[in-house]
Every structure is written in C-alpha cells, then in structure tokens.
Length: 199
Image (cartoon, rainbow, N blue to C red; front, side, top):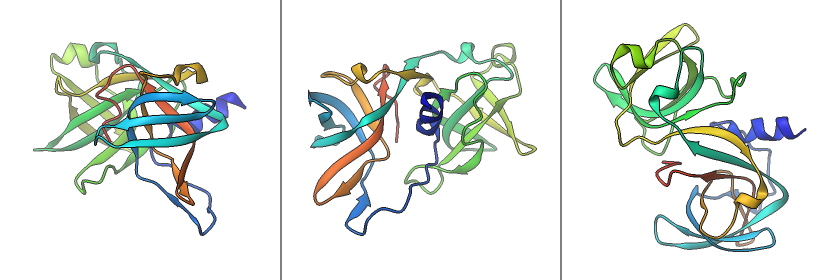
C-alpha cells in the first residue's frame, strides 16, 4: 500500500476524482514551511503570500534530494520539464525516478506556459560520454534531446517521512483542494534544492 501511495505522488500529470461542487483545485503552492501544528502547516510562498494547508492524516511525502547530471545513466527513467530550444528542448528541471518506476511515461504539456512540456522517459544515451550537458530521452518510439543548463535543478525522488514536513522545510504542493475557503492536500514534496519544484 505504501508503494502504491508513493507512486501516486510521483505522477506528473495527476487525475483527480470528482470533488463536491463546493471544492475546487487550488493553485500550486511552493515555498517555506513557517509553522506546523499537527498536520496543519503554514507556508510562505515564493509569491510572498502566507497560506495554511491541512494535510490529510495519511499524507504521503515525496523527498527530493540533490543529484548531478553525471548520476544519470542509460536505462534510468527521468522526468524533465522543458521549453523549446531550437531543434531541441531546454530543461527547467530534471527529476530521477526510483529504479523500476515508469510513472507518467510520455511527452505532454506542462506548466502555465503553453510552450512548456513534461517528458517522462528512459535515458537512451550516455550523458557523460557525450561531453555535453544533454539528455536523450525516448518514449513511444520518439526521441527528445534535452539541453540541461547549470541553472536547472536535478533531483532524485525518494519516499520521505511525515517528519520531514517541519519549520524551515522547502515544499511544493500540486494537489491542494480549496473547500469553503480552506486548503487541504493528500501529498507534499519536500525538496533539498530550493529551485525545485519549478512550477
């Protein structure tokens, strides 16, 4: 059951069950936890707002730890949010999935920018041997060349504990629901790299 719950957290494109008419999906939240009381957390967002989110008693945690481009090998399964870059793509972020995971595989729209895409796919070329900050990802018979600038955070996804959600933690919430003026969520990302999640 824990493995299934963690897999759900890693899906980049989430499908939500129908909610009551009084509930609606809230904007994504990204920022620093300034307080936690029980499962209620207060977050100062990157936009400078202060929001309170009630986390589900059984909320799951996706812990993202810092990684390097050289850590990525052929056969690894990664996800990258990117924007057009000539004949290729320029990564805004790269996350490395756990071994054996193929969650959310494919190439699809990403972010509020209409040119943004998310590609979750297998790495099919040796990053280090190429001598370039570049990934080649292949899915559904198509290959995508991703240029990875130094500014793009590279992280590895791991299963985290609820204890990681504490004052000072950098978090991202993409599945918050607003109902009767209150926010709630069933999962949260805690990141070691404050540049991630980007969107």
